[in-house]
Image (cartoon, rainbow, N blue to C red; front, side, top):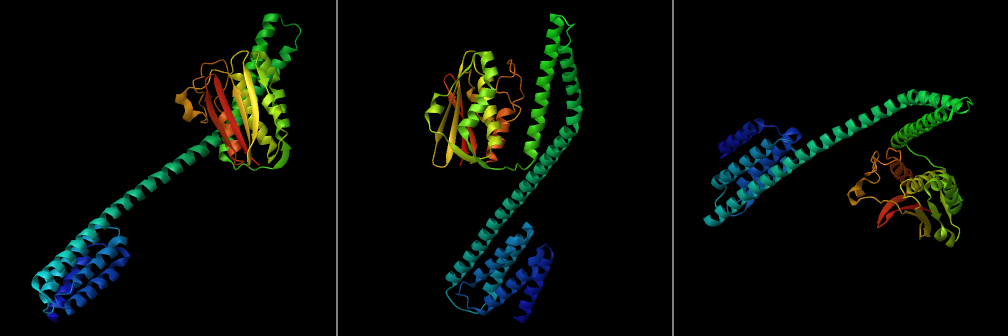
Length: 365
């Protein structure tokens, strides 16, 4: 019997050496040998062949599927060896049933482990691809930022020259009416282009930097009215009126936040409400005090936003079907507002109306 045992141990060693068990080689080999020794010492009627499931389970941490296959095959072979070499005992049909159940358990465990290994390998590949894509996107973002930063001076310098000389020409008394109109057109176009370039550069900097704030208490109503006053001229040019009855109806509200950032966000919202409104339209502004936030609502009577653009409202460089409109822009105002307000743990949202759009802003106290 000792000769048989030595033969089995040598065969196990040869089988194990033909595959890769990573760092668990000796532990798995030891568990197989101990299981065999235990099996050979027990009577046949005892279902000890289940101990060969343990080495199969231990292959879970081995990278290769082959290690699981080899260990399972060894366990099945040793189950037969134990049947032939174990001490007598028990009814024959019980012995065979126990051994068959042990074999089925090993095969089932091996199948599950291999499936899990495949899923882990697939997940690792997907994680690696996602990391590579993230790194690629980060490199692209950094390259974009470097490009915009280097182009900032190159773009602003000629534009400032155009604006400067246009202003000089505007003050020239020798220009006739047509010439002055052309100069005014050059100045307005240059100013619009400069604003577009500045918005792109500012938005790029916002995306790539950590925004730091200096919080303070301020009156939100006064801030809103200051923004409205800044847009009076633009509103008058389109015949748009501001309805602030609901805003005045509520008591004065004081919030603890970053006034400059809130002013920029409300400016973007009111500017859009005026520019994309219909002629002689209305912009209604109201506010509401919640348990832990102040909600500001700005409703316009413009053409509204089509439902198909719902997911793109706050995406940068998207005009939401207004590309051919007379309003100049690059689709950055709402995207910039979203980045800014979320940096203060606030939120911005949109509600579709039958005749226009409603945007709301929630500022945490």
